[in-house]
Image (cartoon, rainbow, N blue to C red; front, side):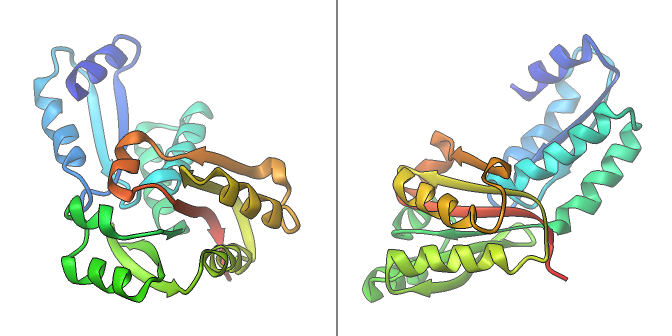
Length: 213
């Protein structure tokens, strides 16, 4: 549980920063907050809603962790986190929206439209909420879209390609992006089983920390 994790961490620190996936997607944020009151040890715990998920959230955590390792205070780490949140973005291509519908993340009408049109839906997050980013008529076009999204950035600090049971598509995208960015800078990750339950197989996404201007 969060309370147990906090207590374990509190054995070696008196300050904890928890950066949680979007509260609009999961009750995890509320549980993380409520768990502070269940702690047995005395420790300052701050919980932040990242408004993101998957590696978009991961880059926010990494930025805060590096700041903490550099010796900043908890308040300064919180400031770094809040300033990083608007600097990340992601686009995700799905084979189907059926799994998102089953999990209550989108409405039946949206899922039905995607299946009827036989398109590859494209999704992003806006203010922590799943939002449509477009649709393509083929998987190849979806990969083109993700590539174009990445190369639209003028400066990239971090970039990741993440997949759910479609490693060949992910590697193809990494190879293409390797012509624009050093491949060793491209994180390759797979969605967790919990995320995969809601997205289904075939999810392919690009997450970026950077600037477009």
